[in-house]
Image 1 (cartoon, helix red, strand yellow):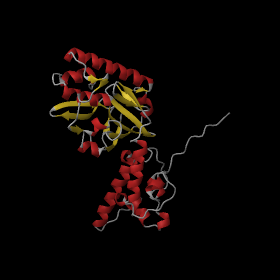
Image 2 (tube, rainbow, N blue to C red):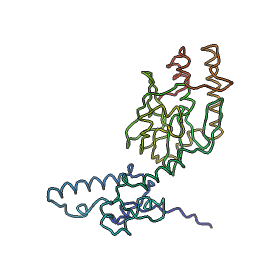
Image 3 (cartoon, one colour):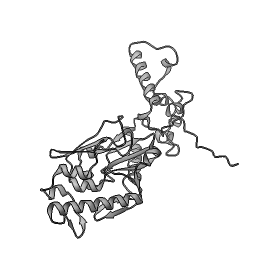
Image 4 (cartoon, rainbow, N blue to C red):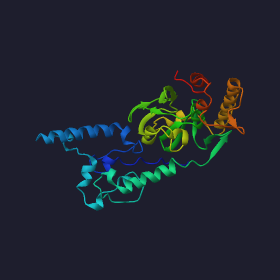
Length: 305
């Protein structure tokens, strides 16, 4: 009988640094979502506060220090870069005392990661001018999911909604570390006083918010699947929740039907086609002032039940 060997979970950063004796990482180093991480950091902060007062806690808790501080005391050859600790690269020593914000390599790594895993979808399907990337999951409320690594995903608003509602002027989301739920309002946009909310396609804890989109919501309209992503999430039940979404052929069928419904609506409302050469134009709400914002939302953007 063939034996199936499961991949062993890597050691937690705190264990690799020697702060704790045994702890595996089961969250793919999404530390902001880890209760163990939060508990240790809380204790370390308390220890620092006591030390400033000239006191030291007794027992194991009193000996806890941040994993970065533990490694700073080691020789350079024993100060591994955090990306090596996470298994992303071969050994590289940390020369910045774990102040990653000042590290050119860290910036380079993240830039390359985003370029190759976020900003370059394989290819796009076209539906009368509406684009949809291959390999993305789609929610019927016109939000999308792109799997990055294991249980980490990026989500955003699709090209169809972007073209229908036009250029967004503000965007609001829950804060980093907050939990959002599949099928519940998560992304809130407005356009000169007109407001709309989009449902999250999956449940998860927010690990990153696209700061560029926060500053310039128009990026969603310019590049909804790449630069215009909105949130990054850690999703513990991702495998199950993806079953509730559309993918590949079902994406195509859904988008074709949505485009057909939109054309029928536009012809009924305006008596003219809102596309050039059979292709859907951009900013339909802005270019066709007789169309009601509320009716567009009711017909095409699903609401939280």
